[in-house]
Image (cartoon, rainbow, N blue to C red):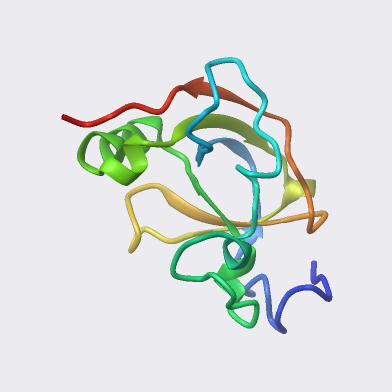
Amino acid sequence: MHDDSMPEACPPPDSEPGQGVFYRLGEKHLKVGDVPGKGTWRKPYKAKGPNYGRSDVCEAHAFSIFESLNSIQGAREISPWAAGKSLARVEVTPEMGNLLETQSIADSHYEWWSNPYNLIPESVVIDEARELS
């Protein structure tokens, strides 16, 4: 699976077709039950952050998702940035793209190169943004 919008060798050869339920941080204004749109599913090279404008970097074309709800909830307990985001649930199937586990970022963290490239997957918000005190 290679898309002309991505750099060569992207997704990485050690990535594999995805399967399972995952979680993603989303837009802060979303409420439980809302369906996240383009703002939540924006590629990292188009969003504020370390990969902004870096379309030549493979990881900048992948969504950041978590397999463990406990892991992402834990991150939201200690990070004001993560706490300020809503939390969406998405089910990934093999035809929806490739995953690569990247635990160096966080426990149960994956990079997801979607297929088709501009996929906005069916997902639902399961927790709203909050403020840490």
